[in-house]
Image 1 (cartoon, rainbow, N blue to C red):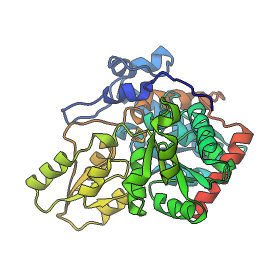
Image 2 (tube, rainbow, N blue to C red; image 1 turned 45 degrees about the vertical axis):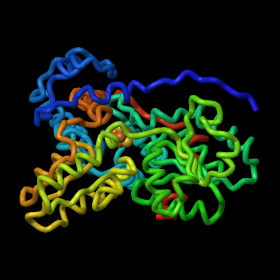
Image 3 (cartoon, rainbow, N blue to C red; image 1 turned 180 degrees about the vertical axis):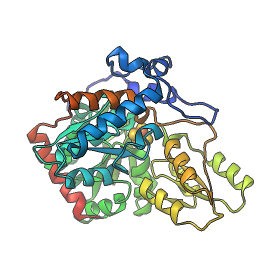
Image 4 (cartoon, protein in one colour; image 1 turned 180 degrees about the horizontal axis):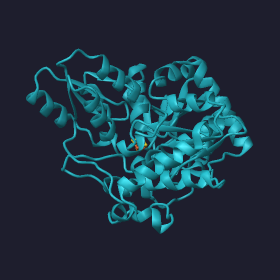
Length: 402
Ligand code: SF4
């Protein structure tokens, strides 16, 4: 076995995560030029768009959108800013939006206001004549950026060397990963999961084999493993910068769940202390946490589930309910505004949007819509056919295991 030494690197998306954190409650868009003042490294675009005020951009987007009519569909993830979500024809989590992208065969362009891996999935699932556009190419996801395909391939090879090829190791990747990783799962009897069906995919995998490699979110993986009865002593974490992920061969052989060392920079901000403080302030509070939060937070919460679960829970709660939510702030603020008969607030008092979702500034939306009206497709996302085909295998399996 060749032992490779690697230099640990932190994705730029992770470094920039706190660029727009603030204690002030306002999260209103400024001109892009002003937002660049936070020192972020986003995609460059013509300076005229950078200088437009939010009001000018709003008018310009409305006009460009109307000219395109049914040729374009705009999909908006729940974590997008209000100034973007108002233009979305549909909103949802990554899973719901991918299914929508697969079903809307009439529109020529799918404008994905989300992050890079979502646009890739939309391209894989959409029809060949459709073009998927991501308004800002630097809108990645820090969690997805923590699993680079070369590191995952090295991990897979190392595990095959230690365990043997007939071990029955199943790779499961969370939706929040690159198409190349989804393809690796597709060609190795693995599967894609979402935060809604992670437990079902684990059940599926353990029915056919002993062991699971879960990529890239160690927290969703650990929370799901605990739910499925895997002992904490049967889980190991794979650090891509250390030989054998920082484990011994015996530890790998004993493990039943190998967790890639990745995390969501937004959901790991929530703490058990914040939950206790919310309970002190509001004795009747119900605490909802996303399963990308740490195990301690998920176990201290009353409920945990995907963004769609959180959205439905809040809207179906009785008037007067008090609900503290551990998920992205743009979504929590929108839930609070849309449910004025309930008290809905974020567990973290510091206002901290997902900085990669925040990269879809209205200036980018305006720029790509103007391009489409001029016959120019800016920022098209394409996945090569071989990768797309193998990814579709893992995505199709996911749909049968819901
Ligand atoms: S909230 Fe976390 S997992 Fe979701 S896009 Fe942002 S960084 Fe990625």
